[in-house]
Image (cartoon, rainbow over the protein chains, first blue to last red):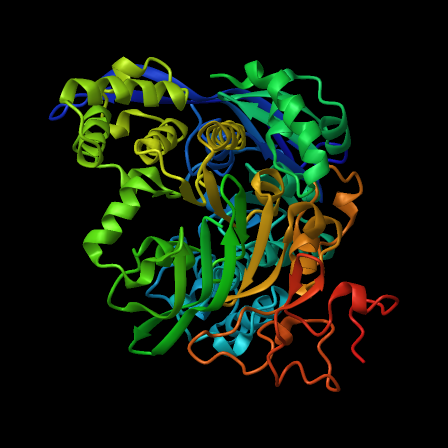
Length: 287
Length: 336
């Protein structure tokens, strides 16, 4: 258990530096770019932090660095009192039971040669949880939890629509009863009506299992509908963060304001007002 | 009317059967106005656009019925050669992913100059001058330098501007834009939408704007067509549609959208639409939304008989036995 009072996840001064390579036959490193340039935030148990930003702002890289799927260049990632950047091998694998990820693209993140049952049950096999029979029961239970018909366990992912596949991905992430799930653009590949189903599902699961989410997305309306707190990323840095309400209703930074004003809202009357606002703020986002 | 689509039917002949991707849709586009077509993936909105342009992949697809009247001429009866003249000079199209429509092996300049010279009788030098003008018009910085660039050197937003410049090169009277901003960041999307609007005004050009995003529709469209499972289910002016949506599907689509400006959003559940659209190889006889509709009930038989597209108010069409204004007082989700 975590020490009382400490957040579940504590990220401090996280940096991820990538080399910029040049040359056709011999890769020469000509420069470096900090995709994540000193990012700090906390996530409490059962809480959702929404991480928003435009493509290339470093939000997905941040998520990968937390899970140690990418090793950070510097900085610290403390999960449940343990410094993940110093862990390796078996120890890291154990921590990963509590720390899972759901990807954006339910088409490429599921192995097409594995059945639905194998995909959802794989984490249980890797972590040697239960007997074969117990695992099978657990897979069915997980599929039911995410609203996927368990009679289809022996089918393959390509037989299902995007929304159904995303349910499979979520069931897999839930298999080991994690405490934090990094959701990397989990609904941006889905149609609006399906997107709503998945957002509702994520909210229900959070409630039921006291899950914490790092919810990474570029759609500001989607992020608002799920997040307790918001962090806005730009060029590898968090430019503004705070309670969702505050960031959305009275953003401090010009950039956040410009970002908000750029979102098309389904209301032709409001749109006119927002368009003017956007023109005024145009310079703030000019690259 | 600049364009009148009448009872258009485009089917795909596949091994699994005949897919009725576009199944009898009608609408018209006024000169200088923007018609928005909104719907989810697979509803037939892109196939509609390709049918107008005569670009549906043949086989497996074929226009099996209906007319596409452009300035009174039925485009479905034209030869491939006649069509390609119309495509260059009068109707142009912008797609979602500019990278698939730009040639990666040719510079921006070459592509613009060649397009201009194919459709207009101008010298190479004159075409080059015109190309720079076009890039200026789409507000691409340093246009002369850009002419020498290959597409991969440009960002997504810049590529889309080049696509728009290409589309404008022959002064079309109709621009069909199929999800042109879907792959872009919100700030860039906003800039491209503003640009399209400016160009439309400046060139007195009509636009068909296809998107899945109700927010984008609210911003760009004068008139809106809502498509579902290959059919038009609702049509109205943009103000009327958002003020008084009638079709249960349109209402559900709006309800499913997370609201940017709603402070209680975190506590609320979105109104998800249960189920999925029907299989268009063997669509139901009745209303195609019936299986997902909270109002579909036994007595009216809308699950057995296809409701007609009818005018519920002046200029507002709906294809449903249960439009919002006719079920006043009946709580949502209760079937009678």
